[in-house]
Length: 452
Image 1 (cartoon, one colour):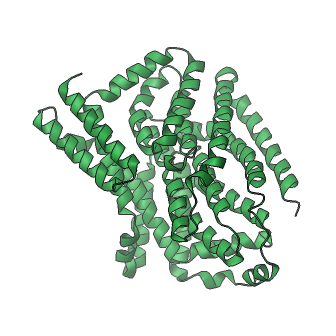
Image 2 (spheres, one colour):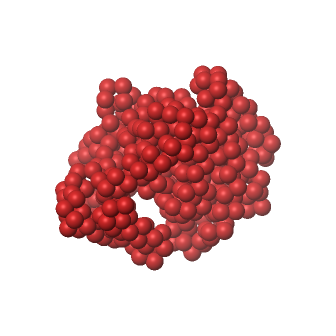
Image 3 (tube, one colour):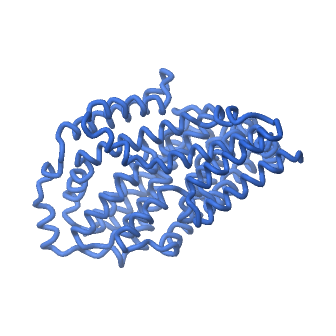
């Protein structure tokens, strides 16, 4: 190993240990690590800091920033409070029904929004509804964080890891959806009855008087600005259509998101500065620092060497490749944030495709499911926990892990079987079978647990 490669690895590992320890600010640690790696590359005359910056995944950075702006504008309009009442009304205040309705809503919006945006929408909404009904919000937040992680796998825009891997491997968005949507539905069908069984004692019925008072509220009173409300509805509608159809005409998700965000900012006029202040710039700069660190690994050849090692382990055996790529990245993502794992492995995805076209798609599944096996594995989990702490009713590490860990491992078993079946029988028969099985499971679970 050359001295410069060793030095870059030392800085990378040291930075990541600092980030994982949670004893220092993760954004500051990532930016410092990127800066130190730049110094190493310049001093050793290996490369320039400009080269590092050029290799940063700016498409992803722009996408995340734009989505945060859109969510902030929608929140300021009162849209989410309006949705809270509209989602609660069909449940008639029955806690288990409300729980399933909220999870179903999370599942749907996770297909079109990244996991951080989903939790920024759902977590505050959930907390407010649960507080109004005087029921425990922790089962809701834990289940929503888990669901948004695996519900995100059918689309490129569903999670930052998807975007990073898809960009690197030039994945087909239509094929990703056809391959992953039945699997995602199947996982939802598995998880709903398990959640309801596990949280049965915590999902207590709200007081009848509180329910009646809450249901009497006119949802339209929650709208603070009708203009911004309708602008947000139109903007999110354009996003959904753009993300669904944009790839057919070469529109990238980051471009669609930045155009929608810019138009909304332009039309909100007087409070643009307030919107920009509420964007989580810490996350944005954390991603920049993280991508800079990974860029240095690319420059020094570490990524290529890691890819060669993985390819030599897998060989030409597709079945072993599926097993390896399902379990190893997912278990690593459980203890390490899934964004850096995806960022490191994304450049390798193209090489894996030469062994089997399935493997880059398996990698997307693995990092998303691995992200919720432990609370520290994905931003959505951390956001749910941090919001619960603000309410002085914190979700403990054990509270999250005791349901998410066994459920995540079960989903890895299901996912492994899914991809092996696709490899043997092809995508169409497995797709149709998956849709049928998932639908039956969902109907059965509703009848068993929602009779009340």
